[in-house]
Image (cartoon, rainbow, N blue to C red; front, side, top):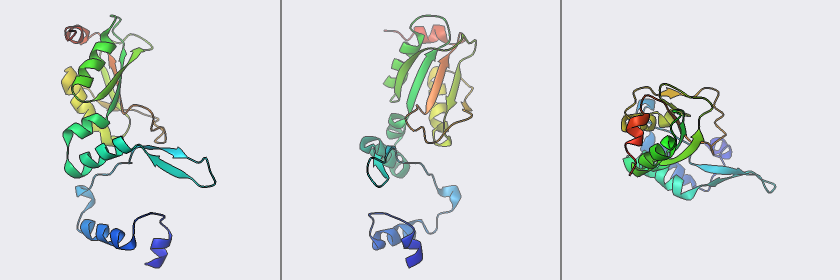
Length: 175
């Protein structure tokens, strides 16, 4: 056991680690959710540190432990781009998603116009959130991004490109 504890650097006491092991002993992998607590790398000194983004870390714990849907949505950063060609669609869709509890922002115009709206998520932990975004926008298709670097934690978890298919309903949400 001493060898195992020697491989992990933590500020948890041995009794706390053993208590966690006891709690999760009967849990199978099908009953487990995992995620990385949000934060940033810091190697400004002689050692490497991972600095937690404390408000987002609290929301992550509330989502994973308490199953708090509002916390889950508040963790989800969504960038909305306009691929419809109609001005203001990304901004209005982002405001609408933000009103739904997501951290949404407009990313301006897409690289090229698109017919169908696309919704993509970066990591599997946010697939359900992408489906919630799709439901709110009235879109069925959700997919995982390819070529994702998991170290790029500063990027939004979900990217939406508003297409010509829903732009009129999005613009109808304008106050």
